[in-house]
Image 1: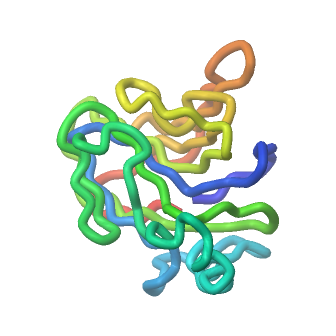
Image 2: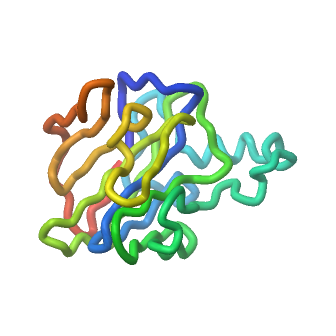
Length: 178
């Protein structure tokens, strides 16, 4: 998932929000990517590999490279890199990662997108992102940016409202989004 013209506060973290009818498998670049990253972008996995030794001693070393729930942790099943929401709208992020420079890329394979009103928002959040875990997800505040392929929208909340605009192609089960 790649965005341009993003102004983060302190760095970015890959993040996803979704409802109980969406299931996805995240690929930060540890496995071969379906699509090559855009020019001058690096995979998030490359960052994690380069930073592993530096971050090992930090307080987040146990979460480095693992997906974890930001809110609604009882509402999501995490098995390796596959995330399955159990109810509501949980948000997950990649632990121990804070991208402060460069251009970065990751992919999500849409495993299941079965609900007529299924919602998933894939993107990035910065250090000031506050996840409610109930209704708001990535892209619903001014410290996060997201793409929703079901509704074909890009989301980013500025100071006055949610900046929603047409964006991207419609996704369905089996698609790889990057």
